[in-house]
Image (cartoon, rainbow, N blue to C red; front, top):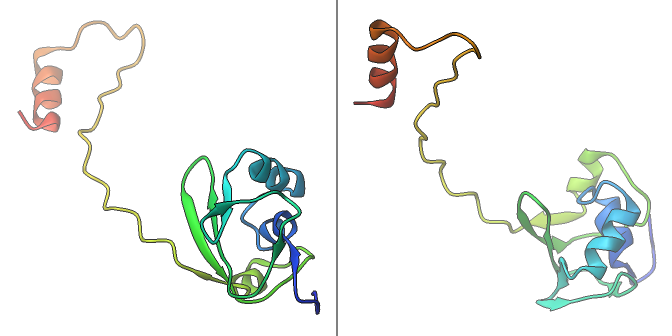
Length: 123
């Protein structure tokens, strides 16, 4: 753990397990997917306690407030203590109509199969 007053952004993002590798964190910074206090930053930008870090990944966008500075990768339980998650909860998933998957080469559906499919789709 770091006792200094700042740490590199890419190192912290990797250490708190937001990015899988240090190079992935650096690449995210270069691509502009990491913001500190609302501004895009380079990988070597110093990070301080209280800063707000926004990281956009392929799945989601996370907003974190720095609670503790670390440079070494730690367990998930310890990493969770190093930030306050400000990410809003995801919107509720809308129920998507189930998609009927038939085996290839099964032929045309029978009348009974067709009725089951229509019932499943809500018709």
